[in-house]
Length: 296
Image 1 (cartoon, one colour):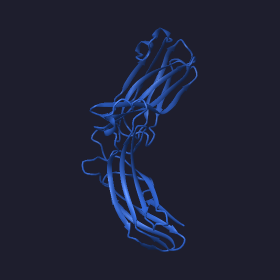
Image 2: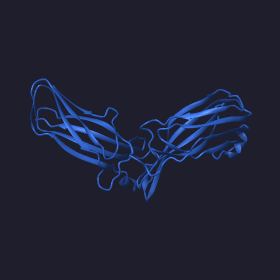
Image 3: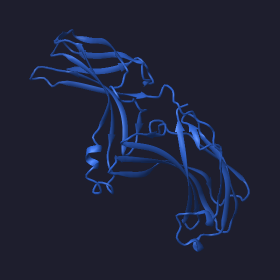
């Protein structure tokens, strides 16, 4: 039996463009191991896909939805031969550089846009033995960004009159919620903060929630498919809250499921926040705020 593994020197697996990815390929075997060569492949891909509602819309999409290769590097770590019984560690070092004309975007795990970087190792074996493969993901973060997070205070007042997505406003209970977000332009490593106050509300309130939403756009000049999906939902108030009391807003951005706001020719990743007030009868009202996320 033989076992193949990859160990990166950096425990957190976070790298920036220009870094060297160093580690070891670990081979463990009981008895001498014959092989036909060991190869290391480093690749970075943007995978795009359409939501079910968009699939039938544009045939032109299918060409623009091919995976985009940002990084591709192949290295022979061992020529065909034999490895001794027990554990063998083969060191490797690979410079982290994008393909010509490409950019290394930050790692991001979305629904319709996925940016992922992998180190794979393959050991070729003779016909009767199965080839061995192993892969591990590493994470890319930007070195620096031209656009730094400049705080932009957002004051808001939510009343039945300010709601845009409600057809029958007369059915909405009379209420007034005031507050602010400390900034709509944020460093991704810092939390979203602010506060809100229910000044008055004639109906009982069941819950107040903050919802983080990703808006992913895939497409090309012929058309775009744009889809919003929830990343996380944090309840900041439970039950019929006291009126005129300030309720803090605090949300940490989850790693990998968010990235700095990104816009390219083929895809875009934007983020928004929804403030949601749920009434006791389960009707709800929501107010939407676009966010801009940066690394620094």
